[in-house]
Structures are given as structure tokens and as C-alpha cells.
Image (cartoon, rainbow, N blue to C red):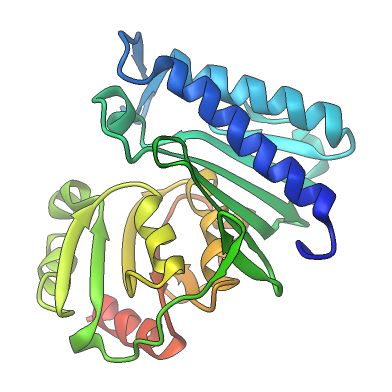
Length: 262
């Protein structure tokens, strides 16, 4: 689809560029921080990026609906039918407000609740990763693939949200720290992008909302990997808040799921 639709690719790249320009206007500057009911932070940068991207999508895709982290879903009474854009304006607000460069911009386009296109933008790194279901994943325009790793003992494992896991799933965290050859603790979307690039073999993530994981699904899967919740279920708009596992191969994914069930 991406190869056959250069206009859509141009839109996606332009959207990432717009999101980055707005975000970088605020990065490493004094920010006003609010906290939501779940204690997650939000800044004027989050709101400004989402408003800018919403405006662009409303102009160029007037028949599509939009779900954003900060401003919700348009026309909720229609359910999940048709095309929906899902926006995470700044994935990693805690990273962003602390000056860390590995915050991202996430975008997905869903059809009937299923993610078909996923985008990861990394403004400080000038990196754009686009995945399209059944077509492929690109990194700055060049096609990329996950690794062919099938051995859990040899895998490079990233564990996201270690603090939450320690508090809420200590037995799971203890198990995860004993598998793989190399383990790293991390946050946010970039580990999943690294998996799609073939640098990382497994990413465990926890306590995510649809705007966090829906863009990840096409990015990883179209590169050859597998993404599900911890029970092995496919991820859609209806999955709600969830924990996910990304893996480079189906064999590795199956082995990780067994570890999570133990």
C-alpha cells in the first residue's frame, strides 16, 4: 500500500515533520506540567502537537475520525467502523520534560478498529519509521526487517516500565531479568522501533493505552515481527489498557509468552 500510494507516504512524512517542529519548540524549555487522574503528566507541548496534527488530518482526511491522547475521539457514537487516526503527540512526556532526547511521536491509521499503518517519529534523532500492514516497514525511506533470532538465551531484551513492573508485577519482573543474553531497562516507543530495525529481539511493555501500542503494531509486524498482549491476543482499538510483548520472530514470541505465564 505504501509503495502504491506515494501521496499517503508524503502525508505521513510531512505529519512527522510538523509534529517534530512543534515539539522541539518546547523541548528543554520551561514547561507547565499538569497531571491527569492516572498521575501521567501532560504539558502544553503535548497539547500543541496534537492540535497541530488534528488540524492537518481534518483538512486532508475529512472523512476520517481522530483519537488523540489529549483530546479524545471525535464522533464517538459511530463506534470503531471506518478509518480512525490515533495520535500520541509526545510518547514519553516524562522523558520530554526532563530534557531526554528519546521521546517520540506516534500515529496509527486504523480500519474498523484494526491498525493498518503505524508511524514512529523521533524528532531529536531525525528518524521516521513507517509500517504498513502486509507491505513493509521503512526507516527514513529504506525498508527494514526484524532480526531472525529464535533463541531466547541469545536474545537482546528490553524491559519497559520497570518501575511499574517492580511495584505491580514483581514476580514477572524477576523472571524477565533472568532471560535473554542482554537486558536493558527502557521506556516509551523507541525500543519497539529498534526491534523493527533488527537491533533488539524482544520488548516487554506494560500499562499501555491504545495510542501507545496501536502505532507499534504495523511497525513491528510489517518488519517481520510479532506483537500481542501478554496473553497472545491481537491488539485492536478494543484491547483497552494493556501490556504487550514485541518479538522479532514467532518462535521467540512464543517462548516469551511461556515465560510471562510462569
